[in-house]
Image (cartoon, rainbow, N blue to C red; front, side, top):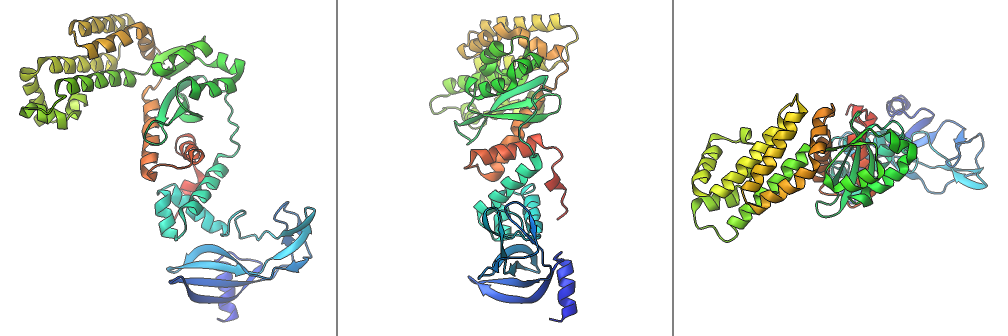
Length: 416
C-alpha cells in the first residue's frame, strides 16, 4: 500500500500522530479479520494511571497489543501497536493511547458504537452483531450508563411528590422498590426488596429535612404503614390502578372457585381459557366478547354480578369528579352494594377499600398524574423482557436509571 493511501486511511480512522505500516487480512478461528499495524509519529507518552505526559519512555513492550475497532468492510478490524512503558506513579506504567478506551481493549469509537447499539437493542443481539461475548458488551453498557449518569449521589432535596411501587426483578418473587419523582417523571431511587425493607433506606437517605419537604406520596397499601410512620405531614394517595387490580384479583379468585374442576359446559370452558374477558375494560372488548358476557349473565349470575361491580368501581374512579363529597358518597355506596352481593372475594375488597377512602379522594384533589407510576413499571417490565432477565441486579438498576431517569441520553443520539 502506498504512503499516500496509508496516510489517507490514518486520517479516515482518526489516528493523527500515528502512521499505518500495513493492513493484513488473515483467518483466526475460521473468521476473516483485518489487522491494521500502526507506527507512532509522536514522541509524547501519557501515563495510563494519572494522565501525566512524558517525552521519553523507558522501553517498548515486547508484544504488540490489539484494540478492536469499527469494522472496515464486513470483517472485524483490529488496530495493532507496540506500546511503551513510562516511569510514573511510583513505578512503571503502560502508556494510555489516545484512540483507546481506558479499561477496554477497544477504540473509543467502537465503544461509542456499542453503547449506542445497547440503547436500541438487547445486549445479546449487540454481542452477536459485534462477535463479542455477552459479558464484554454488558461491561461496555454498564460503563456507558455510568458515564451518562455522572455523579450518582442524587440530590433528593428537590423532591416534593413521589410515587412508590415495587417491580419484580426476576419475573418471580424478587423485587425492587422504585421511587419516582412525580413532577419530573424520573426514577430517583431503587431499593432492594419491597415494603418497608425496600423503602426504609430511601427515607433514611432523605434525612429529617427532606422528609418534611415531601408533600405527598402515591403508592399502594403495601407501603401505607411505613409512609405514615416516616412521612407524617405528607398526603397519601392510593393509586387507582391498584384498587382496580384488587377487584380483578377478586374476580379471578371467584372464577377459579366456580370453575375449579374441569368445566362441563361451553361457557365454563370459554371463561377458563379467556379469563381476560372478565378482567379487561368493557370499552375495549369486541362485540363477540360482549355476547359472551351477555350469556354469562343468564348462566352464572354471581360471577356476572361481580363483573358489573368491577366495572362500576372503574367508572367511579375514572370519572373527573368536581365535587369530592359526591365521590366519597359513591365510594361508600359501592362498598355497601359489594357487601350485599355476599361474595367473599368481593366483600374483602370492600373491607380493604373502606378505611382508605380519603386516600382515594386525595387523588382527585391534587393535580398529580397517577398513571406515571404504572407507566414506569411498564417500561421496566419491557426492559426485563427484552433482555430475557438480568443476572446482575446492579446492571438492572443502571438500565432502569438509563430508561426511566435519563431522558436526555447522549448515547441514544449517536447516528449509526
